[in-house]
Each structure stands twice: as C-alpha cells, then as structure tokens.
Length: 387
Image (cartoon, rainbow, N blue to C red; front, side, top):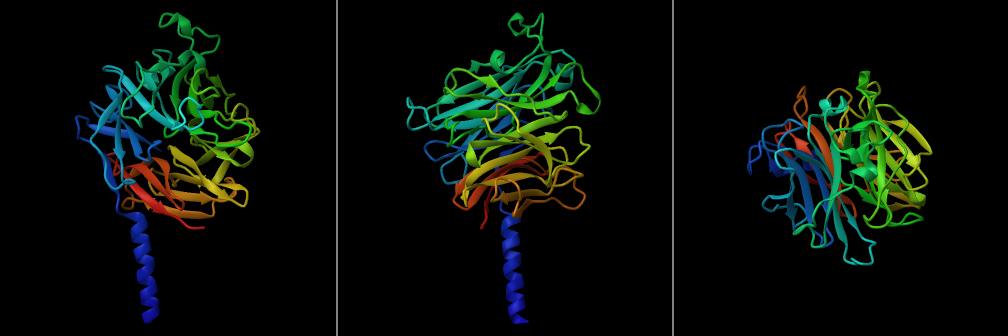
C-alpha cells in the first residue's frame, strides 16, 4: 500500500509538471495591444529564443491595425524581454510571422534570420470575393533580430492574384485571392539533395468563394539561393487544405501537414514530397492526428535508427479547440509513439488552447509557444520527452 501511494504521488507529480507552469509571453490588453494571436518561435543563431506574434491593436479580429511583435529569451524560455515591433503596415494588417534561420549561406557563416509575413488591405472574406489583396514579404537579420533589413516584397514570385485596377503587375492568368503563409516557423533542409533549401508552407483561395471552403488549397514556396529568388510548389490536391506546417523527414524528403478547412474529416492532411516540396508523391488524412479545424506545428528534432524524429503539436480534439497535445514520432511520422498533454481547459471550455509553435530546447525537450485561455494570452512551456 505504501509503495502504491508513492507511485501514485510520482505519477501525479509528472502529470502536474506536464500540464501546468506556463510562462506568459504575450498577454492581451498589455503593451498597447488589445489582443495577441498567431504565435511563432525560432532559436536565433546566438542561441536566444525569439517569440513572434500578431499584436492586434483594436481587438481580436483577424483584420485591422495589426503589427508583428517580438520578445526574446536568453534563458531558454524562463524569462522574456520587453516587446519589440518588427513589422507593421500602417493602420492595416501585417501578420502570419514565419521565422527561419539560414545556416548554409557562405556569406553569413554565423547564420541569417529570415522573417516571412503577409500584409493585407481587407478582411479575408472580402479578399475571397476579389475585394482586396494579400501580399508576401520578408525581412532578414544578421544580429539575431536586434536590427532588420528593409522589407522585400516577393508577391509576384509566390502569389497568382488576378487584380486589375489594384496593381497591374499582379495580373496573372489565374485568380488566387486570399493568401496566407504558415502560421508558425518556416523550415530549412539540413541534408540531402536539397540541403539549404528554405521552405515556407502557405495556402490560397482560387476564384469566387465556394461552399464548405473548397476554394482553399495549400501550397508552398521555396528558395535555393538564400532569398534571391523564389519558386512555387504545386498545390496540395485536397480541396479545403489550409493553414500548413512542414518538416524534413529521412532521405531528404518533406512532410507537409495541413488543416482541413472543410471540416468533414476532423484530422490533419499530410502530403509527402521526394523533390524538396516542389511536387507531392502522396496525400492523405492522418487519423492519428485528430484536429478540430485549427492550426498545428511540426518540427524535426533528431534521428533514430536512420529515421527523423518529429514533434507535432495541435489541439487534439475533434469538437473544439482544446486538449493541446505534443506527439513524438520515431519513424518519419508514420506512427506517433509518444504523446503528452500540454494544456487543457475545464470540461466544456470552448477554445481554451488553440494555435501553437514548436522549438527544440534540448536533446529531449521542446518548447511550446501557444494560445491559451480563450486567446487571452500566449504562453511558453518546455516539454520533456523520452524514447
């Protein structure tokens, strides 16, 4: 009986460790912003953790006066700096921060930080109707985000809008309308034929709005020359594929992981590419990754028996945004052997945990930057895992 009690206490302590002790990073109503949403995180070349989010001036809506803001941690997420604004678009929208570090540019052997993002001049619903434009930009930093380059507009390379009267340079033959990158971090191939390629998952709508959001399709874009030029991938074949994330798997392949905006299947859409994310070998629903129509994050965190170890986080629920869970795969995402509850709200609490992003903090630990408590805060938590 005494041994059982000790064991029960130990199990409870472990569960308590995995489900509490979040560190607030962005709190709605502070720093001049009524709301913070859309977390993204990356480790900078100097070892700092850089946490990005959308700082929404007027409220929680997806459109309006929105800046991309940054806080940094020099102690692996225990404490965070004062807020910094790194991208804005006047009184309009700058959002969907997607950071990634280029570690292969010979001109910058200590690494170069990229921040990709979107701007927009109307609500998403109106842009889907053809009344507005979403553009794609990036900035770079060679001092871990202390200073930034001027923004570079790459819309004509990675978008296919048909926008007569808005910008004649964007009059393509296709009719892409709404457009969004990620959310969360972008990625770079670390080995194989495509080593050094920077890849950014994205999605768009094509033509007028369709029932059940079938005008949405996911795609990606990439650069093989450190941001000088960009190319588009082919579309993910599933209609309704939406917000996306990607990771490198063994053999220099790419795993692309998307939200199913249609909501008919409450699971993540997965596509596999053997040519660096340009084309797709297979596309399928991963029913081991249930999803309530929300965002998720995937990250390569090591190798095991010649397979890449992957971490994945999302609101692992088919009804509401809650039950934020970390899953670990030791076989390139074919199975998810380990899972750990990150955070969960009271029973019946709608939208308690939502968007998240992952960063590796140690060999067997990942940091999770995530939305919590009905979007009232974005918090950081370190999750330890073991094989």
